[in-house]
Length: 137
Image (tube, rainbow, N blue to C red; front, side):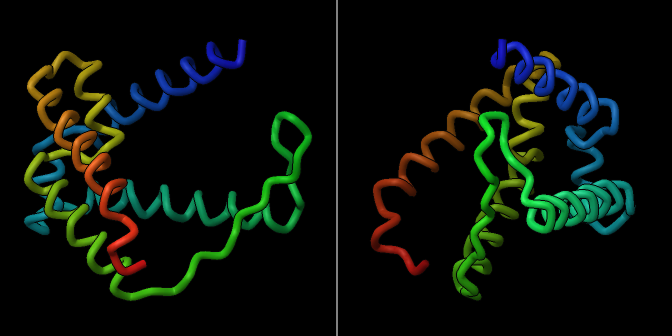
């Protein structure tokens, strides 16, 4: 039953992403060219909502579906970690025209050439898993 709930939530998320044009290559291109505030507004809203929800979870000691407390560990502050990761993520996003969430939305919408990008993302993740111990974290 939980899997059906996750499937429904994922489907709803995909529909919202598609209808808000967050999966639109044109909107992503506009964002990277600083021609439109559409994507910045969308991401800024998501960031604000995320901050509010995380603070709510931390302050009210919210529990998960199994009754276990949700613990969000603090991250280590590391400029190279976020700088290198952000640059790589941004370059991949700009080249592919989609970040991980919209890649699957585009597949669901019938844009099957994005499967090449998904394959590249999976291979890149696998490669990271092989070399992560040698990278600065």
